[in-house]
Length: 133
Image (cartoon, rainbow, N blue to C red; front, side):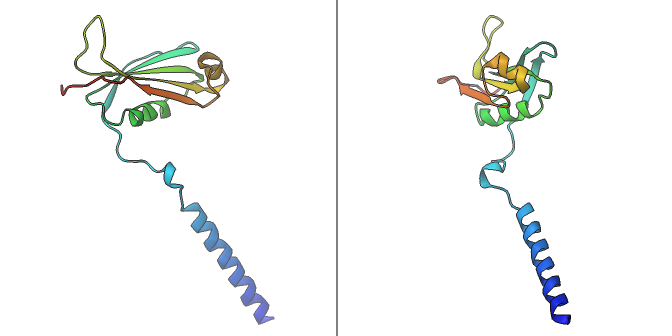
């Protein structure tokens, strides 16, 4: 009887250990690459199925990380169009657009953007620069 109890306890302990180990591991691709560069949301629509979000940055470094961080904060179901501009170098007539992205939050977001629900699309504008402010 003592052997069965010891064996059962060992199996339970091993199972718990495997569960704890499995919960503590993350795929390498899910880990953050580093801190997100500083940015400022300068305009954000709060109504409608299509919403624009304008963002300003001081550098062209890690624009995708900026986009991903902005998207994480968008909670309402809608199609979002994220425009990332340089904080300097633009004029009143033309901004200094560095990148554009879309995010389909929910079925309305998918209908608005043409993307699958929860999907994103992101593109940088080649040859653009962002001088230090």
